[in-house]
Amino acid sequence: MNSRLSLLLKDKDLRNKVLVIALIFAVFRVLAAIPIPGVNAQALSALFANNQLFGLLNIFSGGSLSNLSIIMLGLGPYITATIIMQLLTMIFPNLKALYYEEGSAGRAKFNRYSKYLTIPLAALQGFGFLKLLAQQGVLPQLSMTATIVSVFTIIAGAMTLVWLGDIVSEQKMGNGVSLLIFAGIVSGLPGGIYHALQAYTPSDLTSYFAFIILAAVVIAAVVIVNEAERRLTVSYAKQIRGNKVYGGVSSYLPIRVNQAGVIPIIFAISVLLFPQFFGQMVSAFSLSWGTAITSWVANFTNNQLWYGISYFLLVFVFTYFYTAVTFDPGEISKNLQRSGGFLPGIRPGDPTTRYLAKIVNRITLFGALFLGAIAVLPIITQAVTATKTLTIGGTALLIVIAVALDTAKQIDSQLTLREYERS
Image (cartoon, rainbow, N blue to C red; front, side):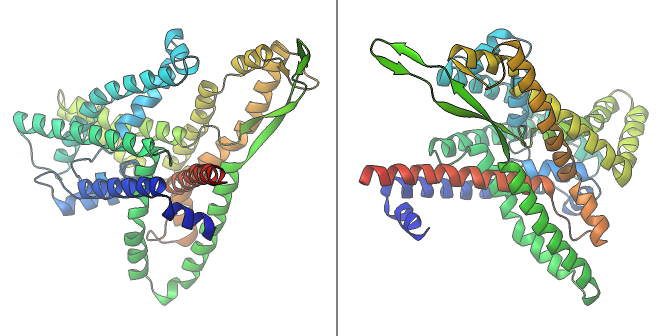
């Protein structure tokens, strides 16, 4: 460990990459601290305290939403655009071929289309948030000119983060978007620990002890499930070309338990937030109807039982849905058959497709249940510890651990390459 750390610090190329990422993190936190004008801090704190959905969105904005900074939407519009583009691959065969069959050039073009889609999504989300915050008294009522300027500022902030994420990705030490979200979550840890210690009393000792145990168990479970996979043995037929024999070896096809990552949670948040934004749009035409919808949504989100059940079910359903989008047993079966590979005991073609579909469905069941439990973990934590100052953000933990493990693997691969070049 020490030798690899010393190699990371001594190698000029790796050291420069680390410094570039650190500089971008610093710029990101500076931008997150610059609020838009006219914010009522007390009303903003009250709004976030009474709305769990905004707290979840704040995770994906890296804490920028709670400050109403110029990058208040964070990377949310870009993530949403990417999800929409991936869903569109199910509808448009040309888009599917672009993403899956045209290699790195196709992926680059696909990502460029996602960035184009980010702009209108950022405009819609920014306008909706401004109207909602003005209605809640967090912002003053803005004129049309001020609204347009604010929306363009929000779009610029969102696209700036996308650009910074691309720079981080170019360093090949992890996914830039994920690392920026990771930085935002980690930056909020000191404040969370401070508030928890500030609210501590001797009578809360049992609750704090239970919280520490629960947190350790959850972290261990997230690491295990995130790394868990089912490995299916793949054998390759021998092929004779000239005087040489090729193939005849065995490999494996990994099927991850958490195939969908945190995408189902993002889907679920979007669905739960839609009625609130819909109420804001209706308010522009009928104030009474808009107020009624907004009040119903507020009452629903404040009901811990029904909110938790709905959130769990949405995450469960979207886990299966997104896994079906990203993992195509038929396509994998065709690729195996083209390369001369087969699953031992399973005939190529349709039998392989059905077998892969059965395995994925069974594994996804556990992954969906786990993601649903992670999503409602803050509600469970509050029930166990009987205090609102101690909450385990399951979504935040999932992101932090997944990003940390992925980044560690990429850094380790670069260090291994450097060691190989030196030997």
